[in-house]
Structures are given as C-alpha cells and as structure tokens.
Length: 247
Image (cartoon, rainbow, N blue to C red; front, side, top):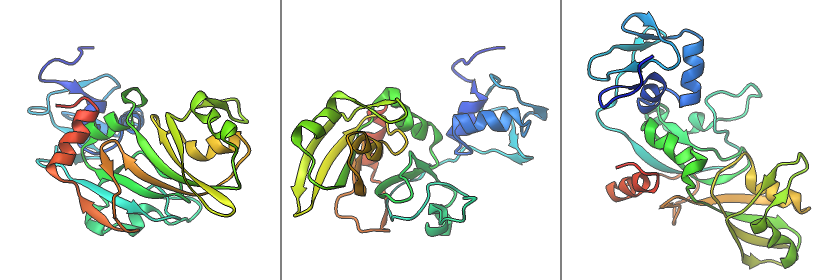
C-alpha cells in the first residue's frame, strides 16, 4: 500500500481534517465499510489526493471546508460532551446554537464540570491539540472538600496511584484560595485524561466539589460567563496552531 507523499494523505487523516470524525472514529467508519474512495470501499491505510479523489461517507460526498471555524465556549455544568446519550442526559449539542452543531469539541469536560471548551471543524488541529505527545496545557480551578494538608496536595506533582492502579500526575498545582471549610486549587495538566483532576484528588482521599477549566493551551476563559460563546481571533488561532506544531 502506497504511503503519503506531498499530494496525498491517509484517508483517516483526510476525514479528520474535514471534520467528519476523529482519526479513531474514522477508522471505525472504514471498518464498517461506510467510506468510499472513487466508488470503491476504502480500507485502513488508503491514501487520497484531496484535489482529485472523491470520498464519500454513507453515500454523501465529503468536502474540505474552504474556511474553518474556531470558537471558545463556556460549557455549563450538567451537559455531556457527546452527540447522543443513551441515559438521556443533555448533550452540549442540544444547548449550542443549531448553526454550530456541525462543529466538534476539542477534548472533553465531564458532565458535572464547566468551563472552557474549544469547538472547531478543523480536524487536524483538533487531533493535534488532543494528542498527549504535544503536551498542551490545560488549567483548572478545583474546589476541594475539606482542608488538604500541603504534604498531600504536593504529592500530586510527583504522581499518585489511583484505586485501579493508574499513575496520574499534575504538571503544576497551587492553592488559589481558602474558605472556612474548603480549598480552591489551580491544577495544570498536560494530557487531559478521563476525569483526571477528580481522580487525582480521589487518590489522596479528597472529593472535588466544583471543577472549572479556565485555560486550554494559549486560550483563556477570561471574563466569559456561563453559556457564553465567542469566535477566536486570528491571533488566537495562530497561537493554537503554533502550540501543537502546525504552521
């Protein structure tokens, strides 16, 4: 099977660049024989020339957007980063304006968390930002129940083992403020694993009461309000691309 050259790209990457699906999701579409290249069923590893080849998914022609869209959104709590939910919970796509439901979310915030969520149809950028190898910073404010001794919360920078044996580590952590009964922390991560902040504190015996993402790479939540949506500036888009090695 021929590999990529200057004109061709792998079919999974092409579908991701077009915002159809992530590379992993694209592989599943291909395995399910739902993808065609020039009227033949695509296979994993096939390459395409975006200028010449015709790609279809479920019979619909895939077109590369002439212009990509990039938005920052203050995701509210009790919304799920998914298009459907078999438990009937509200998804982010039920809350977003209809004209933006074609966009994909970059990374995830769990159902009970809020804060900065990036939305785009630029599949290549989404993939690069989510790739743990690129070590894109994600910064959170976490309200933790009770008073956590310094010797315990400092362990989170060295690495702690969860109850299922996984080792998690915060890149940086510091105290943001104290209340009478609880503590707020600023936690910086570099990978964005599933429920990572919550599981970090669970590993040292504490419960996260509230979690808000305030920064993703060079993009900050700033003074946005819950539910607020804004288009990224050209400078912000260029900063995101630079952060993950795209020209």
